[in-house]
Image (cartoon, rainbow, N blue to C red):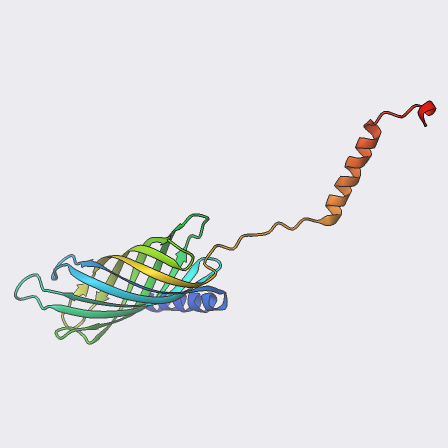
Length: 208
């Protein structure tokens, strides 16, 4: 039930973002995945494509690959390809560093000894650092929870990733333009001129 609710929220975010899309981005990165038990830490690579709206809501599809050895000779080795749909809120500002936080859900294809496909969900947070108009570097921490019925394990990798993104479109935050009411301005000018005329000294009649 909880998984279906999270998936529904992500799909709604997807529809909202596609309707107001401002920027398309494509990128990838590399890092490490750490496990609480059963597996050793393992290098991880990921690729990502997505859309960012004017409001900072982002929707992305992320694919990853990792290969982790079992901690003991009796623990099975793990090969995993998670593919997820993610929703992220990016705090756009006038600086080059944009923090973000998000959630994801998807399917994980796993090696022998595990279910072939497992549903999973997770969370992520990081910072997007713009180094050019169309280029950004990101640093991200992510957590996944993958329950596997075959092995009876819940695989919970904690991941750290550094990567790069290419952005296409207007990635700058939208600035609001203040609309000035012309009638109000004209009234103020008229009042100011009246005050100025009152303060002027009258010219004597002999100089007229």
